Image (cartoon, rainbow, N blue to C red; front, side):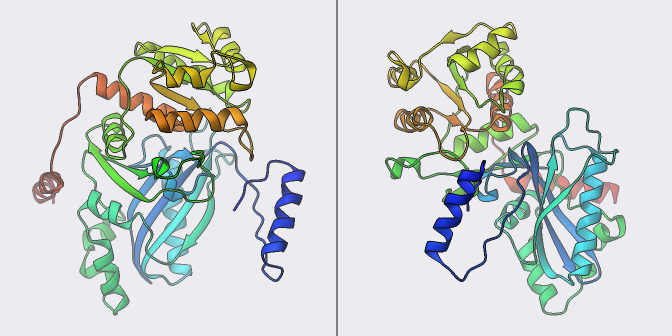
Length: 374
């Protein structure tokens, strides 16, 4: 798979595709930039449908779903768009006569004024899979409902009303209680010297972890720590982003400044941040001279890196930065959406909110609450 940003990339990839296989079709999609991706897992017996979870991806659409962190329940998707995704899920499950589990991936283009009510606020269906997805164990742990076990029963002829009648009657998603559940991927970067850490449409992760908390920030921080990428609570953040990301980078950078971090940036990004009233230390790109950002990383003067990739082929500077970060074990973030999540996680760590609780305790509280209200 590849994201082609220009005609040259399309031509080059098509030549490679023909060399590998002359009799296989090539699927071409129109790419949605700056869109939120959403995973939905659901159970169906061909008539009734229950949604297990609507998971909001932290990385934008275009990053492989297996390589993207996600949060359950969704944190900032307007309710009208949530309702629309539920409607699409019910209609697709029945139209496809799904018996068992189903996974749908949606994309929602970001809009500063989106409220989910206008015709311009669209929900795109990326793909529909009439099978279990990799998120099923995650959703099962978050809800306390064994989705795979119920799906197997449905495939033998049992009905969904035998297992989840209350959710069918209320047309409700499975309950996660008051907590947020964040799934984060685990990457093998340190095992493969020379591999670039930039994320894209091909899956690179080799595992995943889950963080649970009363708020999104703490849950994200826990998941990142479990995945081997501990977020810093003080120090310096290096920021270098593409032209496409520059209109939004100042808001993200200000959040780090408000938490006491210093900023270091290359010339183009520094110009944007300074024009927004932020104080920034400028640093050379690798090809511009020394001391450059890689020197700062090796000198342990950088504690967090926000470096969004430039097009299909990463520039030499970007790849050198990400490799140096892996060697120095410095958290490296390659999307602005993940940077926003990291800021919330750091804020939770600074407040000292990290607590540990067993899933069994959380599910027991949900069960006790349902017994009282039900």
